[in-house]
Image (cartoon, rainbow, N blue to C red; front, side, top):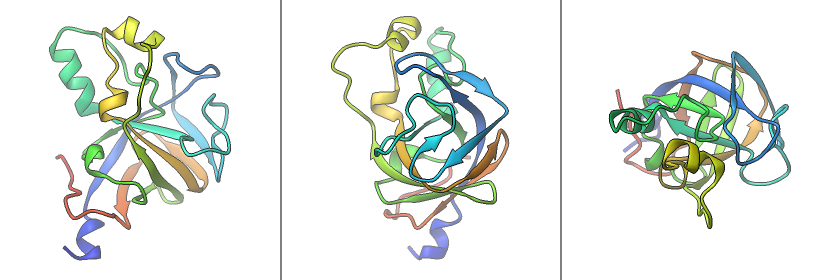
Length: 163
């Protein structure tokens, strides 16, 4: 599959969420400032490390909602709730362009949770360990709800849009 075909995987930002404390549900915001090599301004996970920004697809929420659990975007601790991109198919090194300026680089797919966090207790389960991805900010700027997400410089042929 050619590099040009990778850039066809597109989605959008459904929600942006931040929190001042780790391990808690985040509050939704209309826009957020992404700072290179740091993360999202005002978010507890920002810092000089590989998990500056977390992403989870609305498709993961839909499966949870079908089981009767009520949780809103940001409720699993993710910063960006996406729609239309198969996040689990991305691999570290893949870049995502969000809006006109922000570029994120995927650094991790899934995570290990040694003990259930506050989110798992509130929602009944936490899907971030299985379905969430993490990234660092390469190019900063402002992201708004509704902005387009484009997969760029994908590291895997199976990357696709889910819509």
